[in-house]
Length: 391
Image (cartoon, rainbow, N blue to C red; front, side, top):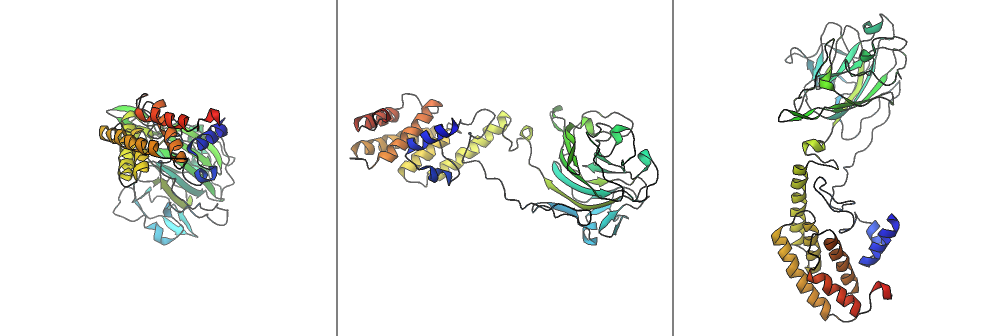
């Protein structure tokens, strides 16, 4: 059905399929923007995804390479140790050490945190518990990764080492146990890939509780788990606002846990924050649609008559600007007069293209059903025997 409708549309515009396939799409095609969607379906005006060169996977012997847009927090060198400070006294450098390309906790040195602060992110962390097993339960290879310094994803050697489930490796500590235990043996490198979304509040009302997704060694352990206020030790946390930004903290729990290949990628805001997701708040969608329409009007003003008309018509799908609508009426009247005066099939492609555009505008009520151009185009097509039913 989709291919049939696309083919029909291409014929309607008298354009070869290869022409459209080579560009970013066509105007007057998919369902238009609505109250909570700033873009039409298959919208050619939607920004192209940014190019990112993917990283490489880690092995036990060698850390992988981060993606091209990652912010590197620790890459195994002394130079990146400067990205970290002591948590309790940020004026002091951390007492943790770099050893064999790893950032190693020095028991008693205290938590460390990044100088940089951010909010929603994709975070990559690799860690290794001591190869020499000592202790049990929470006393064995214990550390933690604190998103924004507030929500802990537990680090713990749970290889053949049971503990309370909401304090297990990969748990949202005090909130949610991991869905699986895919840890490898102590002394080997474990890989955490984390997607973090902070809570969103507006006027004291929770719009989004915040969520964590965690993969351990490629196995999903948390699936968009609600933060429930961020979790904590012994006490049940409750939903609360988070700041817009915060540091990443690594915990000193008295064990010489090692870290390597630590990096993050900031994530765009969500719909509830007026971000670029598919569905937006009505306010955010209205703002974005006006922005798109303004860009289309600006581009149309630099175009020739027919393309100017089409550009202004397209802008009306996003914003019913009175001045643009008036221009569409005048330009369509001028164009229709020229089309009527034309002889032969010289303007057939253009006429069929405008018919498709006006039909779309009428069908979606962006122009009145009795708009003169629609009837005028239909009359020309019938008069010249171009009606599809007669072909």
